[in-house]
Amino acid sequence: METFPSFLWLLRDFALRLVDSAGNPITSKEYLENAMKQAKGLSEAVESKNRIRRLLTNFFKDRDCFMMVRPTEKESDIQNLNDLPMEKLRSEFNEQVNTLKKKIYSRVKPKVFKGKPLNGVGFIALCKLLCSTINAGEALTIDSSWGSICKIECEKIMHEMAEKYEHSIKIELDDKLFNEHEVKRINA
View 1: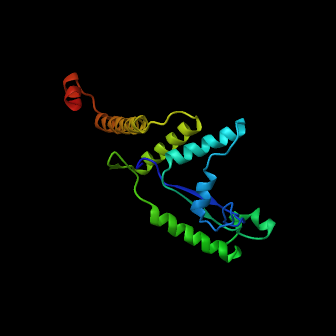
View 2: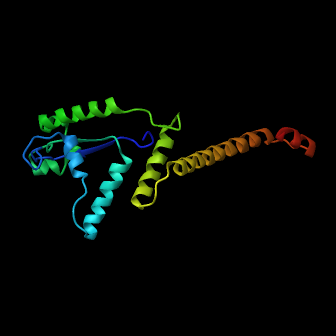
View 3: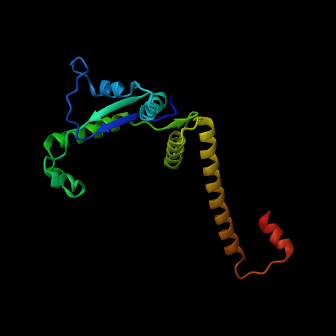
């Protein structure tokens, strides 16, 4: 589905061994796909988790997973990660950060909808709309979402143009008195 972005699940502080139930090594993508499998059970909690799994697998056909070690071993540093320079973090973590950046940058493509690229504002609006629709558990229809985004963008442009018009008229009319004929000529 060209409409939906790729889904990258980032697991930081990952310390488990990457093996399947038989003990065979697996990739991070296989780990993700195993996590997306429906759980058995009929409780409300199980159904809630399975619903999220279904939504993710149905809407995001292009999925991947990236795992990172704990950035530092010191608990006090974990509490203040934003204030630590990269040099204070584990070298393995820093290497993973660089690998993650490369992975993201190599996969980034302009978002296209109906053959037209979305600008940043349109893309953010689409993301917000998709997230709120998914979170509300509503049926997702991309065409109606796209229509909503177009309407928002058009209203924004119309408002900007009205402000520019009012500003230009104010400049044109400042300190001038016009008769009805001159006003009609300016607005023609």
